[in-house]
Image (cartoon, rainbow, N blue to C red; front, side):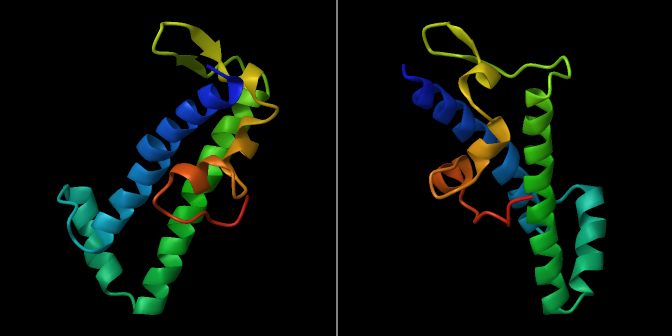
Length: 126
């Protein structure tokens, strides 16, 4: 498996199970489908807003999800004592930080993880 294949497999999981799940939870909350009490309370508050303000809130949510993901990946690059390991199908464990020249940068561009794997458009780069 090539370096790029490993990074992309890991990136696909990060985007789908972290970024997209967070954005989808917000979208479900905004339309009243998320049924946990905390989401129902937020839904009631959101529906009181005019459409333009709801769109602004959604844009802010996507931006903050992207910024959080960016900051997390950047922290891993900074040697804070945390590593991001990927286990291949054959059991090999690979440190993703060592494969990439910048994990946070893997998110962006037309060839980045968000463009390749997300069902939601990218926010502006943090």
